[in-house]
Length: 372
Ligand code: NAD
Ligand code: GLY
Image 1 (cartoon, protein in one colour):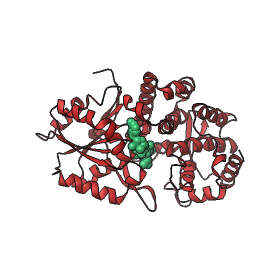
Image 2: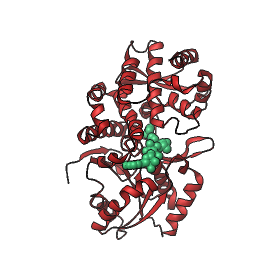
Image 3: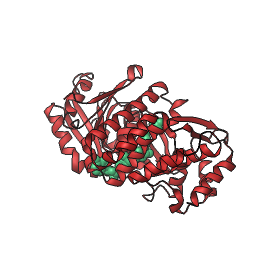
Image 4: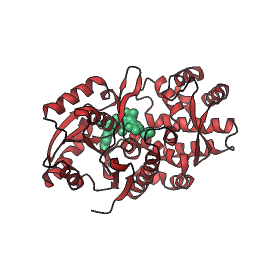
């Protein structure tokens, strides 16, 4: 039972463990029981999941909870990004209250980032805040969205514009669940893994160049290692800057360009979030080279690795226009006083926050990339 990587997110009395391993779903009851014991006799949880994940994993989780004598009820939502909206949140809150939710109740988010984000937000606001735990089942959720306490939903004004910081009590990342993840979703999550190498760990980037293909093809040891390293990187950044006043913004590497491309695709399946981050990271390194922040060759090295594992590495195939993408950037959450903040890099493994980058340079880099 103890062959897990355990990573601590250090946030004072809101600190928690991230456990990474291959058998965690079946042991969930053992890990949840001590947390429930803090609430006296409330040995009952409400699982929130989506239909895809419920079909494959809900019964296993329920069996694990039964084994620990933890009562449970499940709320099963539609899969997909459209579920992260006000109507679904309202319905979820009503379902939770119908179940007799109490301050001592605990929610369990079983699924990808969509389920984690809406469940975490429901936990943040139901009865003015109750506990929740994350059992992430996509690679993206295991390395990014389940850690750090950003929760929320989308509005017609854009993605993730309504939400709260609300940390989970524990994260159980069961690598075994990745076996059923569609390949395209796995690759999209892999882009976020690569991101940690580019941000501040060139050694990890080199390791991914060696072992990324094994991870993609199903090697559990490589998956466990990559998820644990990624979670350790995110935990360190979140522990130092929970509310994104500084270094946490580094986690947005590739996101300013990526978000503009997702917006241009109408946040549809044409371009998944992780695919957009892959394209956006290459553009961020090309911009870093263009303005002389880093030497040549870094963007090509990154693009080669992304393409080698099967991720898109050039935006030329999507029919974007540079002006349209820059237009979207002006509406980004990260715009301050009309100036776009970019996460750029001095090298692979050395990302930096840059304000006041000349828009001509941004335009030139995008236009060149669109020519292929
Ligand atoms: P997702 O939750 O939509 O999951 C992708 C698809 O995979 C869904 O159809 C889901 O049903 C299915 N699925 C999940 N696990 C599966 C499994 N093990 N086997 C088979 N199918 C499975 O998408 P995602 O990429 O996990 O998350 C994207 C969301 O995460 C976005 O809403 C994004 O805004 C959010 N996000 C949040 C943060 C944060 O810090 N809170 C960070 C990054 C992304
Ligand atoms: N996904 C970015 C963050 O958690 O800050």
